[in-house]
Image (cartoon, rainbow, N blue to C red; front, side, top):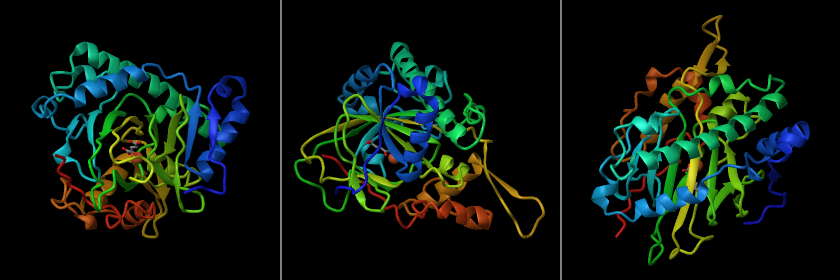
Length: 335
Ligand SMILES: O=C(O)CCC(=O)C(=O)O
Ligand SMILES: [Fe+2]
């Protein structure tokens, strides 16, 4: 679907030559669309990450599935275990340095490869901090305002290599990736293939363009709450219409998260004089309960919604897709 509005494509080299103008444009794009494409971003090592992804996903299942994704979002997110998507993923969580030490990576990821992953993550981290400094200034804060809440602490940022495999025929009733918003601060999607669809400012599905050398950036829930929704966390998905079913799609995705203790917002409570502080940790608990309540085996969280503060629960629900009824569970057996 086309949009009547122009999708924002911005050049990161303006960050050093025209900080004020650039940050204004970045903020406007994130306010209107919640998504933009950044060219000239300078993150190095993408080809190598794609190369490692391709080698890894070609390994026999026993080697890939040696370590399955855990609570630190590290490990193999395998075909048979994946919910919400017809894909397989290899995920590297932890704060900086953690990929070198974790015991939850398949042996194939030796120390040299782990170092390459760390280096790529580090380039992404620097870019994320630069982008957030633009938002901070536009929100009337100090340039380093968000940096203090994105230190190398728990839960850390996640790099995920994702392969959406080709099929002979289009599977029925299952998208490549179900519609959702992301959870943290901002996300980067590096890909050379079409397929990503987002809700445009008129709330219609829009096919994201592919810009060679550009990275797709989107705002996630936590940053949206932090900015009282002036930065938009936009729903997105990957369908079948834009990319032939017989074509593989690989993406390299970097998710940034605030530190667990970061206060995203304060909620006024009638019952108390003190506002309730909603931290990223609180948000995560609510969001994962809402999301996994709809899956067949309930996830790990259980669904003890009564334990949550009602105002906080309603706020997270107001992000629309945190409603468990919207996400559907898909468990697809790939031949
Ligand atoms: O693979 C992509 O292009 C997007 C992935 C995505 O939206 C996600 O994993 O949250
Ligand atoms: Fe996403």
